[in-house]
Structure formats: C-alpha cells, structure tokens
Length: 319
Image 1: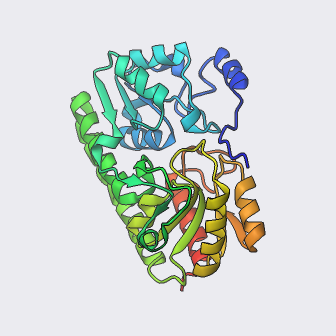
Image 2: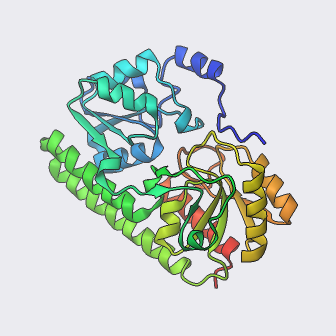
C-alpha cells in the first residue's frame, strides 16, 4: 500500500518555483516581496503559522508563506529565491522539526527575529496510538516509532499558548505597533478558548472514544478531549503500515465499536478505504489543517476545526 503524501511532483514544484514564488505564497503576497516593504515583513513556514501571523499582525504585517496551499508541508524544499526572501524579512515564524529545509534555512539566516512555535508550548512523544486506550492495547508485532509530535496547532489550548508567544515576539520586534499586536493576540486567544469549550462539550458524551486516522496527527487533540487516536501510520508521513499493524487495527475496530476510518485532504485515501472495506467501516475526512485548499471543509482554521468536531461527533456517536 502506497500512502505517500506528495500531491505535487518535484518537477512540477520546480516549474512553479521558476515562475516565481508568488504561486508558492499564501494569501498574503509573494515570496519575492517578502522583505523591504513598508510593513513588518514576516515569513511563515506553512498555514498554521501563517494564520497566526496574519491574525496577530493585522494590517501592520506583510506575511509570506513558504508552503503553497496544496503542498504537503513535510515535503517542502525551498528554492534559492525563497531562501533569499527569508533572509530579507524582519521575522520568520516556523515550527522546528516539521520541515527540515525550513529549519536549515532559518539556522543559516541573519534574520533577527526567529520564532519557533515549538518552543512556545510543550511537545510530547507520540507514536501510532495516543490516549488512554493505547495503554490497554499496545502490543504490536511491528512496534511503533515515537517522537516529538509537532502537530500542536490541532489542540486549541496549545495553539493559544503559541499565539501568546508569537504576539509577544511581534511586540518586541515591532514596538511601534505593540498595542495592536497585544489586542489582536488577546482576541485570537479568546476565540481559541471558546473553540476549546466547543470541543469539550461536543465530545464529552460519546458512545466510543476511539478513532482511526491515516497518520498520527491528532494525538494532542485526542489527549485534550479524552479520546484515543489509532493511526495507520506513525508520525512519519512517508511511512507505510505493516501487515501486522493493519490486522491489529481491524481487530481493534471490531472490539471497540469503531465506525469510521479517517483520511486527510492532502493524503491518498487508498489505505483508509482498504481497511474500511475489510472491516465494513465508513470513511470520512479529518483535516490536520496543514494547508487550506478547495477540498478543505472551511476557509480558515476555525471553520475547519469545527468541521473536524462535527466529523468526530458523528463517528464517535455523540449524545
């Protein structure tokens, strides 16, 4: 089973880059214009970082995104132009250990303000199974790869912690607009706290607490709301499940009353559909919000998170 998470071939990416990194930017402008604008120039690594920069920075920032909306972030390779634009920016906002090419470029960059989102909250070691259920059933022949899980933005509480850290960094780097950054950060944190409450209430009473995903992106969300994520693949988006892992998941699904196998918008649904077919389960989308595309169930972080909540409620049998 091939579950490689590469939507855009390398050759195609090279062609796009050659046309100029405007096509690789998010909704905030092209990478070629990342530096030396009249605003506070911020380069963000991928959508969750872009969202924070735009919401906190407001009209005072010019945000350039290194990862295009339809590209799987883990696969990003930076062009020479993108690296140059990063070096000309006032600040870079990224998530260390998620995109090696970005980590390398940031380490070599002379940018004064380097904001690592991973340093603004706590990270945990997660493997294929995350949550209370894992301790009861984790005896797999193929073992599991554990490591620091970077998917902190899917937990509204951790994401709010990151937002607060980003806000403070913006205030320090651009003191002329510190009051607005503080105000914008507070408003965003309030919205994230409200979203957390929605998840708490929406998932408090469900018939099942176990859900299956294609790869282990939802561990923090599962832990936050008393659920268990069973991932077909581990944290490595390029890995493939062994036959033993697939067999174990099929047994677990039957034993725990799992109704749905979730796949992602930027990932092939082949493995999910194979397991669902073998076990008589349904498939649905649970979006890790690594990028917003036309396939996303919403146009921003909050809309997609609420779509995720609805999907989980339906799959778990919310009462």
